[in-house]
Length: 102
Image (cartoon, rainbow, N blue to C red):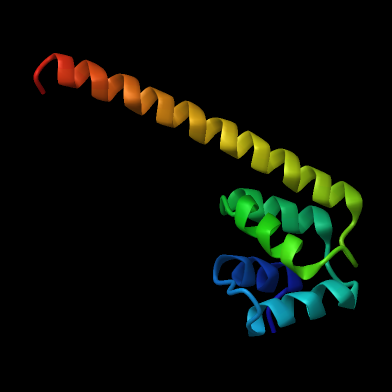
């Protein structure tokens, strides 16, 4: 049997709105067996913090420590800021290449 942290990460990347992965995620969270720091580390390592945050949001407020939710929320904000910055850089480069006839 896989570690509960691993099961949650797997559920996070294949989640549907109300399917068995969401039900299983709720069961895992309610079991009280999650090592929250380990889960965060694994989500960060595999670059799936936004997906994990979406899963946690769908499971409801119970069972997830507030500080864990806060860390995920901050990570999602940072991720969005990075994406916006990358998009802005892409647009600049596209404009420069277009101006150069490339």
